[in-house]
Length: 172
Image (cartoon, rainbow, N blue to C red; front, side, top):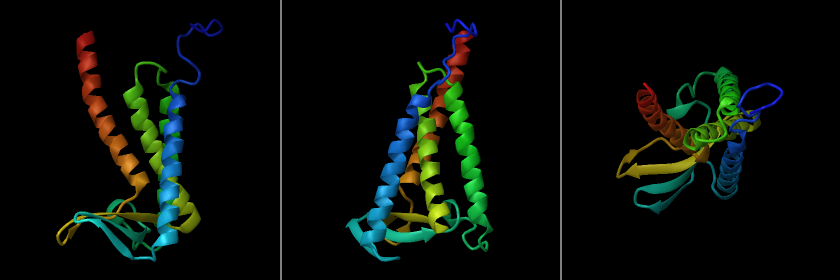
């Protein structure tokens, strides 16, 4: 218990999980650097029959949403990502340090992914995508490490919401 405030919350909450966000940003930026320095734009390298690398630039959001919108979307997506990142960091700060590791990890993955893509948008005006998954002639839209972190974090948040509901039911 904090003697000055009389509360049991810690001032930093689960901010210790931001190391995971930083690791995602480093991995994301490093892999993008490797791609831009080793593959020409649109160059494709097949690794497996269902997986390859393709150097692409995405000015839009997921699945190239608004990619041809004329340029305003760059700042719109930056603003959304910065706002979401700030809100998630506040959430992490308020989250108890103990007992919520899964939720904290999910939030940290989302933060890392958002920051990784914001760096691209600010520096280049687009996000560098390169992971290509396909089956015969069907291609899933290319993505990157940041996108993967956001997706995994979002799935973890959904899973956590199911368990949170069960925890609340047990308390009743």
